[in-house]
Structures are given as structure tokens and as C-alpha cells.
Length: 98
Length: 145
Length: 110
Image: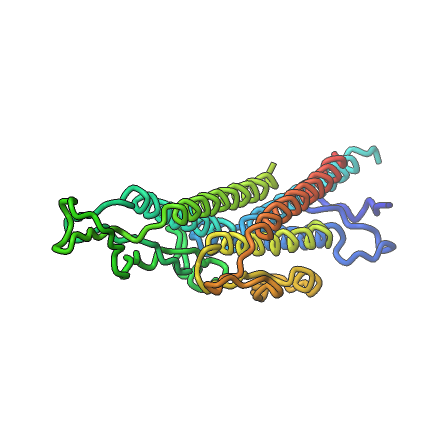
């Protein structure tokens, strides 16, 4: 994995460094994170709906609701870990002596 | 929710078998009762079971949709024996009629004892079912651990 | 999140739950005149992998009918009660293991 130093601008910590043109990932990490965030949002919505429906007594089996919440949890955890890694990598790069 | 509704179904089974047992015990206790407040000897009682959908306080509409899944049991009616009472010749008996016959309930204690055992077995079976369902629900909750 | 195995296990548990509901209904109606034993075709429903659909309730074939029209065999229902509960327990444990594995894998990256 190599970075093109000049392409790293004074952006906020959230925005990930761009990969050089050799890696072909459209939009780089930023896009990946956005995509993952969307998926996490989806899982969360499904889980919330499932729990609501359980509470109102209209829902399906209990284990389905629980699995939906577990999926949402795991997705969120994964997302957080990935984001942490990305931020770490960015910070490392920033610390590098030019 | 569906698994939880099975608890209502088992509960209905417990209720029905208990009612049945109560009637049988009443029969056995009154096997020789020749006079009742309504007049005449005691008449054997029996519970007529019918299957009926069970609703739980937590859900209304959904249970009706589930159809076959939530069919518990209910006592549709309590049936009183309509046969002619058994007549025994006991001229000295206070309840004897003009010809010296006393009307006794048509109850065969042996039959009712066997039925009582069956009701007890039915009751236990429903207890087992409820216990198994409860365990399964607990296992579902354990997925969170 | 979580792979196809987890989805299959969930579906398996779903069918077992529905089957157990029917067993409960059969047990409750073991002495109801005219009542016929209900079941689902487990293998078929599991293989067809219809998520979220309601499995077809069928009448269990080949059971002896008593004089009052009831064909519930309490021994059969007891067996199914135990079997369904055990399978459910196994599936639940496997699923929990899956969740733990994935969580471990995520956290190892720390």
C-alpha cells in the first residue's frame, strides 16, 4: 500500500487519505467507509423495526429479533474497528518525517 | 411472538384438563347421592372439549391470523347425564318412591377413576410442553449472551 | 453480516419453533373429540428456504383414529417435544458460537 504524499491535504481526521491511482478503488477509503456506514444504518433500521414489532406483540419469533440486533451490533463493531484502523493509519502517515 | 403464544396454548390445556378432573372428582364424590337441591339424584357431569384459538394479552390481530398454530382447547360445555337414573329396590330408604325404588346416579366409579388418571396424564403432558417451550424461549434469549 | 450458515441456522430455529407450537396445540387437544394431529413437513420447508413465509400446516398422516375422531398419540408428541427442544438448543448454541467467532475476528484487529 503506498500513498502519494502530496495528495494528503489538511482535511479533517474523518476523511481518509486517498490511495494513489494504482489501486483503482473508486474514491478510496472514504467511499468504502460511506458504504459501510450505509450498511450499518440498514442493519440498525431492521433491528429497530424488529424490536418494535416484538414489543407491540405483532412480531415474528424472538430469535429473529435477537439475531437482527446481533447483526446490527456486529456490523457497527466492524465499522468502528475499520474506521479506527483508517484513522490510525492516517495519523501514522501524518507523523512521518518528510 | 409465535413461540410465546404456545404458552397460552399449553395453559389452555392445563385449564381444560383441570376442569375435567374437577368434574370427575365431583362425580366420584357423588356416586351415591340420591337427593340434590334441584330434585332427584345427582347426574354425572362431563366436560366437552373443543379446540379454540388462544389469544395472549400481548398481541391481538396477529393471533387470529396464525390459524392452526394457536389452537388451544376449551371446555365448550358441561354435559349432564340425561339417562334415566339407576333404580334400586330399597323400601326403607327415605328417598324411596311409592314402589320402594330409590333413584341413584348412573356412575361407574371405576370408569371415572380411569378418566381421572387420563386427565392427570393430560395435565402433565401440558406441563411438559410448557416447560419445553419455556426452555426454547430462554435459548433464544441466550443468543444475546 | 454473518454468513449463510447463520441464516440457515436461524431458519432452522424458526421452523423448529413453529413445529413446537403445533406440538403444543396437539398436546392441549389430546382429548378433544374430532381433533386431528397437526404438523409441518419439516424437510420440505427447510430445503425450500422460504424466508419469512409461513410453513404449510398439514395433517400428520398414518395416525390411528380413536372412537371420538381424535388421532393424537401422546407418545409421538412427547418425542417431538423433546426432539424439537434439543435441536433448537443445538442450533442456538451453534449460532451463538458464530456470533462470538465473528466478534472475535473483528476485535482481533485491535
